[in-house]
Length: 271
Image (cartoon, rainbow, N blue to C red; front, side, top):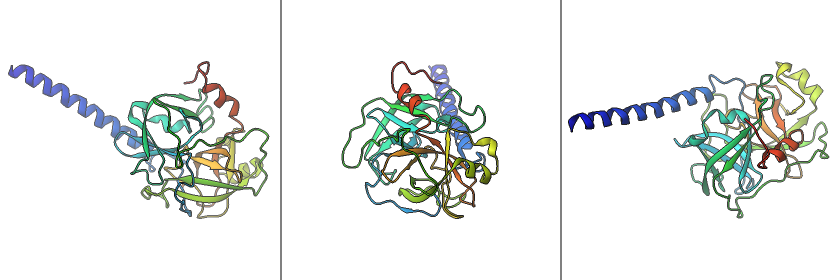
């Protein structure tokens, strides 16, 4: 009897240790000191209540905010591929709130589809879809967002708005209140001349920039960038940490629109 109890205790202990080990490993992968480049909002302000009902927090089962995302369908969240460094069984979707510690609702993730060419080359094709096990319930604080079509052409200087729970300063903690900031679209050639590593910039990216001290930072990854018509145009991918005078870079929703539509069907196969 004592032997059975001892063996059971060892099995439980090993299971807990593995879970803690996974948590620590994943935390290191997503820690701002390790992952470069990064994304978080700097220079913004608290968003009005229910201002971005499409915004979600992708949280770990340990209660940590991991990434942002956008509701595009009752089962689908659009986000960045690098947000899926966490196994999906460790993720939850938080909706209907400006304070991710006070969920309007919480949903279990049952599958995800990541672009098969993510990081081929580095920082390219950073886009993914997360599927919820049950339908997302819509209300005044929870709504899907319309994706911009390929006809929605952006022009230099166009206003773009970013929301997220990323840090408000480099290496800072994530605010619990949703932040927002207005930025300006930067065309591809200008962005390529301004970023430190032009090889990281692909045709599937769009850029924003206003001035030093304003932009995205870690924790905003995967979050929504919208145009003046409140259409989703970008997902936070990468930038120099943090708001230090370089453009921020996003996955272009228009560019990946066909991929997104295909992946939302049973025929859509991804990695």
